[in-house]
Length: 455
Image (tube, rainbow, N blue to C red):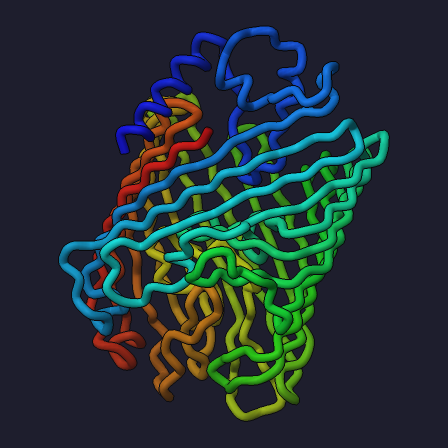
């Protein structure tokens, strides 16, 4: 830990002396440090971000990484069904990458990932603990204009609001795909098209291999600066899995998702509306599933603490009847993981939720406090509830009760500089009538502290 703190101090002092540095990107391969080519300072950190390979600087190497520690403490995990753990546990993650640029037309990006789960007494999955593995390794071939890129290799995929395709940032291991992807940018348009195999995490060292039983492909189009609407996303995703489990059984799934997202900001308003329809086959059944969501907020910039008040709401289909010729359970594909907060108690299938929230800037761009309240119901009483990875938590059980529960969460985030991120979160989940029928039905109390250093 002392070496981490020393690294933080050195980076912070070094970069303050050299002026403001650009913010880190959620996808680290999107960072561009070519502007340092003309920098003649002796800053060791800038030299790490731009290691000159060719004399003129057209070819260079950039190095970076991340260290993250999280402490978790849960009371009544799995609503009282999990073993008691009074001490809590610590999750740790490190990421290290090297970004090679060979002239204007070729690039290689490689990244290692390692994670650990110290003190977790039950349910330790490869997502929690994967000591060391190759997380990303891809090369880009660019056109001279850089408006078209061919990307081949292991890579992270992230689209839109990350409701369906995400890097899975909040859980301990980020997720990746072995993929071939084409990227075309033209003015206000950007189009991605890809074909991939999912790479599941495994607990040993350097043994993460693509799952040939999970094939994922799609296209994603973004149109910016649309009159009135501001931004529009249109997309199609295809998924083929040789075995998937739902409340209505197990079997092969071929699912197609078509969707659209309208998003942007106007004056002090922010808005994000999305709708998805899914079709295909599961066993011999026809898939007919859907979701609609909205997230809008307004920030009072002329009021102390700049309060932002918002409302999220979602309706996500569930299966109306077991044993028939249809499956109506929505599959969120590869979502965020911690979909409704870091506690990650339930996932977005067979669900209706209403989620008001308020955030306050206690110190602008540094300290923020957020409070939110969420109410959850099953969309269909004949379907169960699912985890974020679509694993069935509890089946329908033949109970008519739809109330899953209510959740109150509060988090405090502190960002002293662009390198360090600190967060504390407290969540209380009160079990509803359905959970009291299918589980011990105890209320969950969750507490977490996160510290992240990026460089």
